[in-house]
Amino acid sequence: MADRYFVEHTIDSDRVVLGPPEGHHLARVMRAKPGDAVTLFDGSGAEFDASVARVARDEVELTIHTRREIDRELPLRLTLAVALPKGDRQKWLVEKCVELGVSSIVPLWTERGVAQPADSALARLRRAAIEATKQCGRNRLLEIAEPRPWSEFAARDVPESLRLIAQPEATASVAAVWRDRLERTGAAPREVCVAVGPEGGFSDAEFAAAVEHGWQGVALGTRILRVETACLTLAATLGALADDAR
Image 1 (spheres, rainbow, N blue to C red):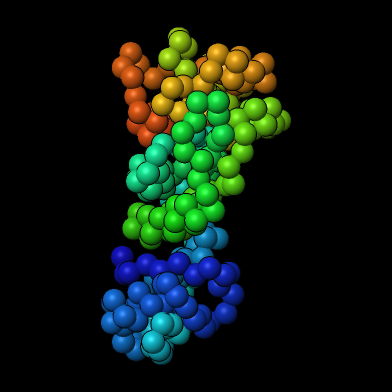
Image 2 (image 1 turned 90 degrees about the vertical axis):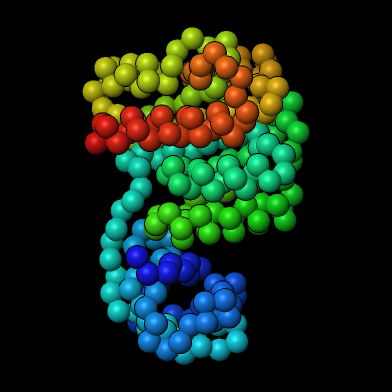
């Protein structure tokens, strides 16, 4: 696979200009020369074979040769609503969620939450999502939404979706809930939302409110997991179940 670069606008012509930071990286770090082959993607689900036409200081003009529809996504839309951990653990979580096929992350404000990401932090996480997407070969970007209060997010109405909330006191496993859904409806869910609380977990009131709005509690084993471990366990499990149900 040729080096991959993200284009922030829809590619709809045979010429594209990459500006900073992608153009700077291609021109100054990779020292691109006219004729070099690269792969572009614009988040639409397609990728494009292109070649370098012109190199300037911080931008590169490229010629588009071929558009290819290549789907490397999960067969469901997977949203992760999470009270983000502190510091660099946020970036690591985003990178791994991209690799596992998560569609979107919604940072949550919760009663016991410790990290409330500012706009600058969200911008860094969105950049991390782009870099991880380039590396793992996805052609759609992980969306990182604006933070929302858990009470508001839990109450939203999402018909036909499967909504799971990680809770140590729960007794059902993710696989058991998935099988039950298959038996009742005869089809695998096309949209799943999973919620993971902060290090101290969701409060009893937060969990009870979620159940009232149709969320199902799931257990992740007998050991205590960090926030990012719980998130990736859920994403990997649901991804495997969805792939098996194709």
